[in-house]
Length: 330
Image 1: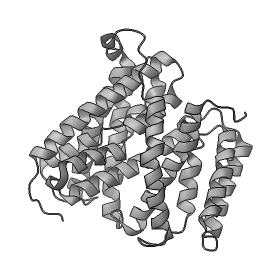
Image 2: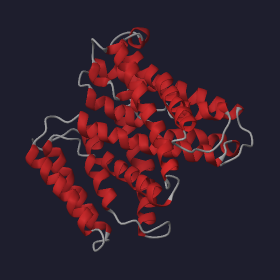
Image 3: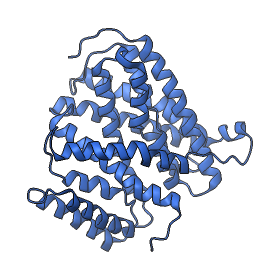
């Protein structure tokens, strides 16, 4: 298996590795020194994200059980950037506690999506290369107290990328694993500076490039006929119905059972948060190209992603706007 790939696949497998590296850095920061510290606080986004991944997958499978089941993971992902963009538009009407919970759920959700990509959408595992990737990760963990220069981790990402690609697993996994190896130096240290630098590259160049090369929907029939397909409906209903109901249901049950703690908020804010998490977009499109290879199936799933994400963004923003009020943050 060589490295000859069209430009769009280099964006998907290469540039998106940087995006996932950044996501993993954000997860590590939140776990060590952020809103996910403490057992009950950490369990809240974990439980919410699990509900928000399981129910969309079940909805898709219910509609496609005797069809193209391989697309079950497409509606399980949340797009952090687009969800936060909607909240930014709403401004100060949204309490910080609501933003924190959404970001935490989205981060854990993305980690789950990355695991699904790595495990569920490989092209046939080659154990020798997979072992090499695992060894490189172990090396990064073992020496991170002594090796702190960013170039060391850049080299590890490159070598790990080759190993996971050759192993038949999505090479974006290299960005996640090596990011977890980086020593955390606090909000003002090197870790913070690297995170800010990568964030600018990710949001200004990498994500726009990915969207430009993968978001176009090439319809082979009428719009209505494409919408009516089970693949499109499965993705759309998974994002628009499964995501919010799965997240909100899991949070309510977890708090009732005393397992988790999350900030107090009105029911409109809680539902609005759940619907904003239904914006799949970048991650869902990414998984679409791993799940399907037929242009027709890709178009159906893409349209489902775009429609489900847009409806979730509109309803979530509406609920948060009208549900805005002063609530306790404890």
